[in-house]
Image (cartoon, rainbow, N blue to C red):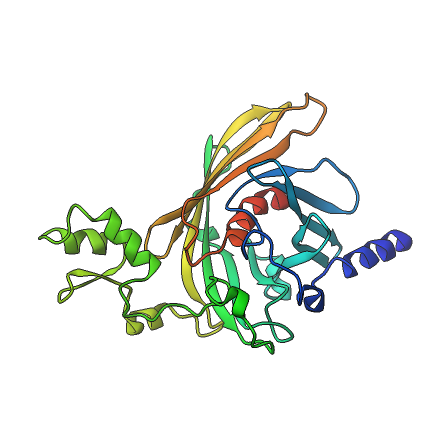
Length: 316
């Protein structure tokens, strides 16, 4: 037992972030780490303790894999590309996160932080108390909030990724040409300008400027009301999982679909789960089809893919 624990701990120690190893490497998929449209495939394995989920791009090329290794109170949850280079990790915010109802993680790229670049950390929190009671029902749902907070790093050279959502600061609160506003104006195009333009814009969670007769993001005073003074995080999106129970592989499985929206209410990604049935006595393996519909959103592709992989990790 002690030998098993020592080996597992050694494996976990070597499966972690190394900012120095990323200093001169090109970030895969144009800085997004994971492709916008991809397939997640659960691996069938028993060692090391935990779970692995492979990621394939649209051309069925192996892009990398999510890994979850745990032994007692040790935990490693992150993503590695196909060459074995780890790009980001998920961590519990604190020790008691292991025991709370609902999941919570903080996601951080390995090239962001005190010893690396200035960038964003994304906090994932499950709104467990708002979820419906799922026991003995044919349908179920899970609700998550995604928040962003900025961390300052030592490396100031950000030429390659200066405009990327992971590194660029949030847009100024009174500018109307943000990606969110552009998408809202496209959605409300038939109503603007006109009497119903304001109602259309506000229905999508943004503000209407009576002078320019267009949309603006929420004023700084309203954003401040949503600001979490404990963590310094600002909500940037939400995720809803809807599931139905189906008889697969000799037992009932919950088959999920996922919708992710920005804070303004615009959907930016969706994902659908299905299972590969391998017979009654063998575990049915999960597969996810992930589709990112808006790549200039405040939530990057790697966070979107993480949310889909999270269900498979939770089930391990």
